Image (tube, rainbow, N blue to C red; front, side, top):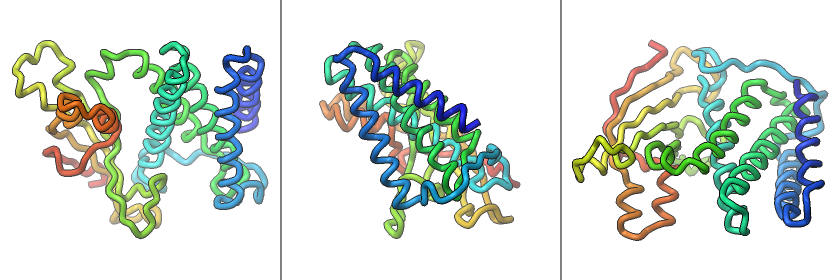
Length: 262
C-alpha cells in the first residue's frame, strides 16, 4: 500500500513541476515542505532506520493505542494545512478554486509524504492515517470553495497544553475534536441573540498516554456554545475571527457527555 502511495505522491509532484512558470511557487512550497519533513523525520523520528512496513492500527476501538483520537488528529491537521495553504496561494494571486485545489493537493502530498516516512521508522505506515489525511485534505477544498457551508459549520480543535511537553501534534490527552453548527448560518433562526449560539458535537479520549488500559475513556458529547468567531468578526477582529473557526476556546460551552467505554 505505501509503495502505491509513494508512486502517487511522486506523480503529483511531477505534475506540479510540469505546469507553467506561474505554478512554480506552488512546487517550491511543496519541495520546501518535503525537505523540512525529511530533516525533522531523520532527526526526531528515526526515518530510514527501519525496513519499510505497513499495517492496520484500527479506528476508534477501546483497545486501540489512542481510541481514535490520533485518526481525528490526522484528519484535522490535513484540513488545517490544506486551508492554510489555500489561503496562502490565493494571497499570491491564484483564483479561489485554483488556490483551494492546489492547497488541498499540497496538504495531501505533505501529510502523506510524512506517513510514508513513518513506514521507514518504528511507527510504520498506517492505512487508516493515510485515509484520514486524504479525507482531511479533500475537506479543506470543500470548505474553502463553499462559503455557505463555512458559515454554518466549523471543524475545530480544543487544546490545553500541559507545558511539560507542549506537543501540539500528538498530545491527545489534552485535545478535543469538535464539529460546530453555527446558528448564524441558518435562515430559519431569526432571533438576533440565538444567532450567537451554536450546537457542538465533540469527541475526545483520556488515559491513553501509555496506550490502552482499563482506565481509558472515549468521550462523545453534545454541547451548546457561544459563537466567538461571530463576536470577533462583528468587532472587526478579522484574524481572530478566522482563528476561532479552527480553534475552540475551552469552557465556552455546556457539554452533555457519554463515555463510550462504559
